[in-house]
Image (cartoon, rainbow, N blue to C red; front, side, top):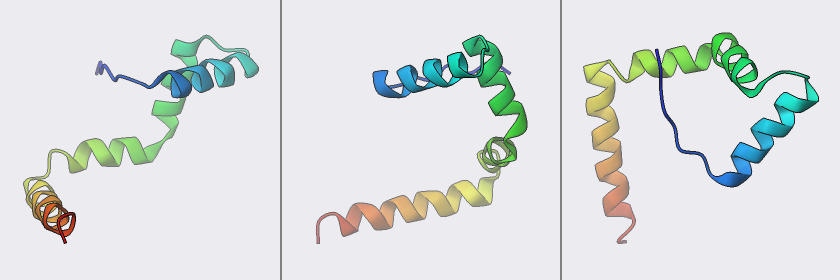
Length: 69
């Protein structure tokens, strides 16, 4: 799986600093984080779940109305 994500410069600098501190290339550091973090896998699965996405859409709609109150 290959994903492209835009990062703000501060987060990118922090990732580079963390990888450097651990003595790892950034690619290896990020792969290690992704492979070890079960939350990312759970989020990917949730994004394929139609019921979850429907609920998420309803929640977003509720917040859209709350912004105007």
